[in-house]
Length: 329
Image (cartoon, rainbow, N blue to C red):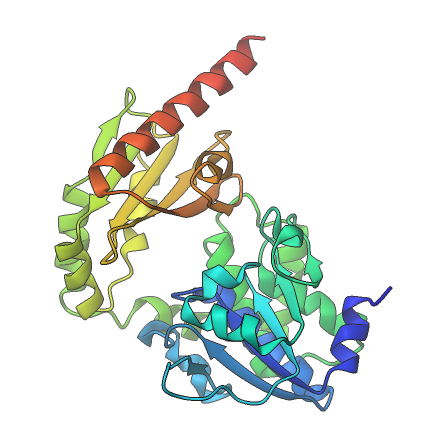
C-alpha cells in the first residue's frame, strides 16, 4: 500500500491549496509543505481560492502565493494537496477545476473525519493541534532540515490554532515545537505585530459595534452575535477579522458557548462556534454539514440569518441538556 511519504516522493509537481478565506493554520501549513517539497526537488505552487489577506502578507517575503482566477490557467501539476480541509467543496470554484484535472488528491489535516473526505491518500491526525504540526512531522519522517521560512510557517499554524498557546490543545508537543522554532530563528513578536498591530483605523469602531450586537441566551450560557450583510461588507472593506469578537465573549463568566453568525452575499450564513468547557460544538455543526473540533467548529448554513440564529440556539440548548443529563447519570 502506498504511504503518504511514498506519494510525496513519487510525484513531480504539486499544487497546494486550502479552504476559502485561508487562516493562519492553512497558510502556515502551506508554507511549510511548500519548502519541504522544494527541498525534495519538486515543483510546487500554492494556489488558494482567495488571495492572502493583509495580516498574513509577511509570508510573501519568502513564499509565493497565488489565488485562482477563472480566466487564468492553473500551473502544471500531477498531484494536489488539500491542507487544513479535506473536501474539494471547501476550496470554492477551484475545487471543480481540480476534480476535472484527474490528478490524485491528497489531504493533510487535523479535523475530525478528514480521512473520509475527497483525498485518495491522507496524512491526518485529529489529535494534532494544527495542520502545520503535521507538516513538521513530515520533515522529521523525511529527514529534511527545517529552514527558517518553513519554521515561520509552522509557528504561524501553531499560534493560530492554539490561540497563542491559550487553548487546551496547547499540549507538550506544541510547546516543544514552539521552543524548537524559536531556536531556529522565528521571531514571535514580529509575527504578532504583523497579525494584530496593523489594523485599519475603522477596526476599533467595528469591533465595538459588533460586540454591541451580542446577546446572552439560555440563561447566559450562550453568547451569540449575528452580523448582517451590510456590516460584513463594511468589515470586508477594512479587512477586519470578524472572529475578533469571539474571545471577548468567551471571557464572560457563565458563558459555555460563543456563536458568531455571518450573513453571506449568497444568502447563506457562516457560523463559528467556540466552547469553553465540555460542550461538543463539532457535534452541533455536523447537522449543518460542518466540522472542526470539539471546542471550535463551523459550518455554512443554507438558510437566512434569523433561521440560523434559531437553529444554533436550539442546537446549543440540546447539547447543554445532553451534557447535564450525562453529568446526572
